[in-house]
Image (cartoon, rainbow, N blue to C red):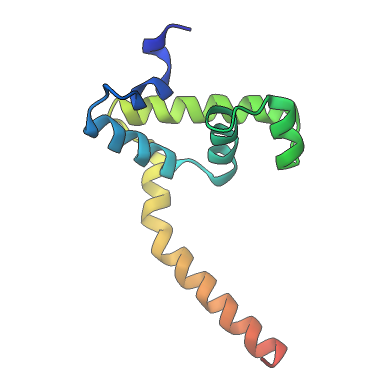
Length: 112
């Protein structure tokens, strides 16, 4: 793989702050498990088998998650965030409200 094809290469020290912002937004837009798999591999230098064991998924699933992460980050670095990233950001306030409601409901249910 050529360095220009690697989405993680856009976070090199010579990369512009705009590219770094896009990379951060791309990471934020990834699903939780996909982001964890990517960070465990690229930042913590774990192998696919160690990531699979740590996350409780198969090695094939790790491979698929890495491919999804690289595709999503490439699109983000190119300035084209995915539809999923837009949807996740749009739904975020509703998720927080739902979590708050569930926590309050559980407290009432348990009598706390």
